[in-house]
Image (cartoon, rainbow, N blue to C red; front, top):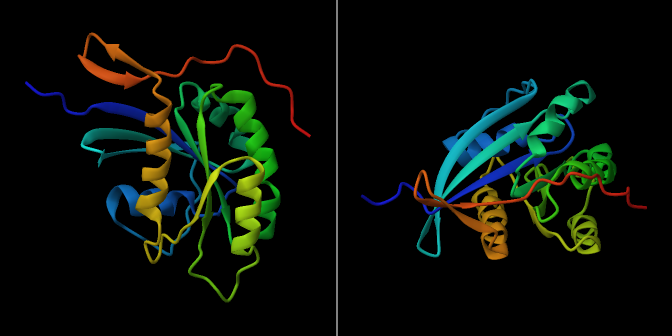
Length: 199
């Protein structure tokens, strides 16, 4: 009997509260969208199966709360993560400024070989834009991240950002065979020491 999937990949979506992480995940996993804003309490979780280069990829996606009071809860979910989508809102300057804080948190808690992509959300709201496309590109280039602007409302680049991070993880090739399930799983060793903070 054939396996249900070829790869299992754990992804985190991180960034400030209100940038649209939950909307991004809702659009990708359930093809849905709502204008109603409800803060994520702690961590939410969805599963979506996609195909890349003829391989079936099962994505296990964790939507993390951006509020400070949930930070200690969220840190534990970095364990074993294969990829991280680092988000900011193109209509919120503070969320862009706080990218460094989220990047450093990721470096402290995530595995050494985790893949990271930069995602600018709410790109459909041209009238209220505060962060230019060029600023997003410049930040991504500084840290060698792939970068896309997305809109959950118009469905712009939503599938593409998840396919990009999944492809990066696959290309790193950290794979071992899970004998009990007889399915190859992507395997990231968990760090035992924190990195020193960047300048």
